[in-house]
Picture 1 (cartoon, helix red, strand yellow):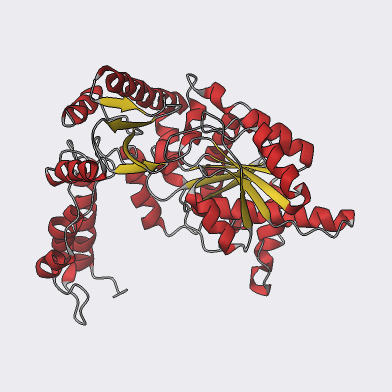
Picture 2 (cartoon, helix red, strand yellow):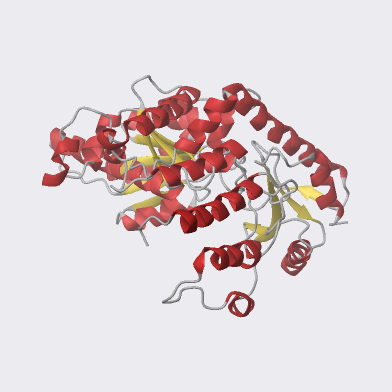
Length: 453
């Protein structure tokens, strides 16, 4: 299997690269859609065999049976959840990363990759207004980013309490019910408790409500506050400035989850919504969401990286050559030791296009979002639930119930016309557009809205 057969290996590699090239250059991109397990059993059969299928048959199965049974998240009418719309350069370079066998966890083994990734992290840190000493690491996604940051927050809070001799062991996180589901899930992993904070009439976490929650429950029991810069369901940006002020008052770690919305920092038209983020102790943004990188990629950045290094560095005799070095080792700043250089596709695309192109692309999606909100307001059968902060629009179709929304979703997907799924808010079924793909046009928006008439 690992021996070199010039003819066979050329065929196998060429088939994979040929498919990748054709997929990267597709225009238009097919939406495709899921198939039943029975269909896939009949169409694909048993794909793992003792003898192997060979590269030709295996690639045929993927191209003609398996791949079409997966939705294309980069389709311009894929507007559900948070889409992924990588630049062609970023997606192509992901092939290079896989082919290069780079270990991205240590400077010793991947200095060039780490250097490039750190430049991309520096750009994001500067957008947030964090100090020049800030730094971090690319991790698989927002869940791991949130967990890694909260582990550091708790480690730091308990170390501070021990040094002060208070005897406290903080175990609580303050967050609203708009915070990403991963916050609650990761708190359970940490055996921590999430203490809910009421939102204001704009669905934001505010300093005033945070102070009430802390005083009612004992600020000494908390080790972190999680604010959000772009909630998944509505795209709400919390009142970061007032939250940061209260965190400083009580000496609490402020973590800002910008997995989806943090990319808005690059857009001058909405940058003011993020005022206060410069005070964050940790911050995440997923480039695979609105910074046009492929899955899976989350930028995790710390104001004081040394605190993360102390909390996360793994100790073992065989690792001494790395952990005792002075160089930047990405695995010291998050959960996990084995690490793919997943930040390189973003770096390559930034290096190719320049940051101005990113600003333009993000602003273009915001322009389409505002158009969608205006169109919803113009149509008498639709009603917006909230004016968008960023690029998520939530709205209702007047007179529809849950079954109507689901039937509409199923029809659009069955026709491979669009992918727009229902959501719920305070017991009501609604629908939403998440517009992060610069290829999504005003014409796409109108075409979808027309189907609800």
